[in-house]
Amino acid sequence: MRHTRTRSILPAAFAVIFVGCGGGSETGVQHKSITIKGSNTMVILAQSWAETFMRENPGIAVQVSGEGTGTGIAALINGGTDICEASRPMKDVEKDQVRSRHGKDVKEISVALDGIAICVHQSSPIQSLTEAQLKAIFTGRITNWRDVGGKDEKIVAYSRDNSSGTYMFFKEHVLSNEDFAREIQALPGTGAIVNAVSKDPASIGYSGIGYASGIRVVPVRRDEKSDAVAPSLETVRSGQYPLSRDLFFYTTGEPAGDVKAFIDWVLGPEGQKICETVGFYPIVKK
Amino acid sequence: MVLSLPRLQRIGTLSDRLASILIKGSAFVAILALILIFIFIGREALPVLTSPEVHKEVDLAKLFLPQASRPGAAAEFTWQPISEIPKYSLAPLFAGTLKVTIIAVLIAIPLAVAAAIYTSEFAPPWAREAIKPCIEILAGIPSVVVGFFCLMVIAGWLHSAFGWTYRLNALTAGVGLSLAVIPIVYTVSEDAFSSVPQSFREGSIAMGASSWQTASRVVLPAAMPGVLAACILGFGRAIGETMIVLMASGNAAVLSWSPVDSIRTFSATIASELGELVQGSPHYHVLFFLGAFLFVLTFVINLIGRWWVGRLQKRLQGAS
Image (cartoon, rainbow over the protein chains, first blue to last red):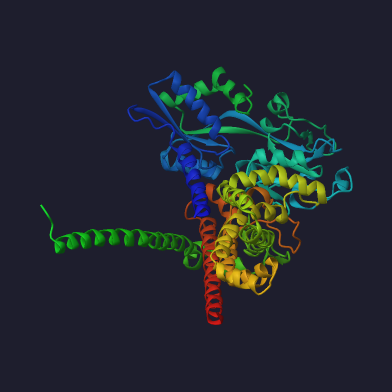
């Protein structure tokens, strides 16, 4: 029957996509290889770095996988990866585990900056929101736009599904780890959120900065007294914009050899330029 | 060399036997696959019932009974697996699944059955030649495309026409889902109508019945078992469909009676949450438990439907 066939093709297609993402950089003959494991948010970034780096250094293979920051950290502790990519700082407990296993300190390297844009419909009268207001909206304590200076209208809030790194970032930084309200709609991608927000005048959502088109990005204030800051290269890099974060590489001990060469290249002008092409920001040189 | 008759027959029986083994084998492959899938799902779901490791986070009581979200708060049904206190209540997902399935079936069955009656009983041949393949092509559209269409177009239409609070809701997803159900119900019930013997219609017309009377009082009752089977197939498709509901239902696990609230279904929950999970974590096993639950649910519905169809068939044969 036709319908059973279409139904079984989809999962198969997904499987192909997942497998394709996972083991893309296996090339066989090369002897030297660097493995990078960790953050799902960073996987596109790390993949672009790896591809360009491998083109310029044909002798070194870089393998990237992005099962999640937690998985990457576990791999670093177990000695299963050279570099752990992480979209949150490592906890002290985790650093201690690496030290007791390998007798070396963890080296933390900030490699890129990321910001989360808060978006509303083009016609929304909202000029800015404080972090406290965002928290109240997404935990369900504020459900009407009237309470944050808008029209008397129910707020329709969109979020990512809970396997997303951006979801975790938002939950940790904006909701201080409280639960999202049950009424918050979870959409299966940042593009879907932007699309939904662009069509619904009473809606609010969050997305990576690179995605924000067709909607209005609302400037965010740390609290009622501080200025409203819109996300941009300058405000994210200066740390003025509240919803920004560092993205990290972690290694066991000081990086050496090929790993060092790769990290130096990532931090160099070429590597940092790639950040911008995939929607992140270059780090601030200290 | 001329083969003697017995020898020819022997070769014939040999190839016959081979063919029959091959065909039998391929039929059993389907059963084997079904059993293997069932074992796999069951094995991954079982720790929810047995593993003390998993029980620290979730057990049957937490799956089926209301639970307080934090100490002191009122107990309620919540699906919130990523949390300080993970909450795994199945009630909102079950309600959501049922809501969208019923809406889709309520839209699809009348439309599809009416279309099937029209094409088999009333339509001139050219109309039948045009309508039938068109509806069947609808079944070939991948559900992700239907979901996307629903998200981008249908949701917008319905939202601007009715002004609901939530643009993505159970009704919107139900309308999209009905697009996937219609072709199945149509095809199977059209077959049922066509297989009603021509003599029934001739007899009815000869008795002076109009063609509407013939269709509604003779052909429809005679084809009823087939139509019912079509409805059950449609229901099964709707309850397990994933992409359309994932894209168009809003995926908020809200427990309510309103058809225009957002919902979250079993299938969409599995699809969106399984990708990022640590294998063997409680959350992972709970998702397999959901899968097993859905599997059993469709199995039971199919079983009841089959029994009902069989009973109806017997009664019809007894009457004729």
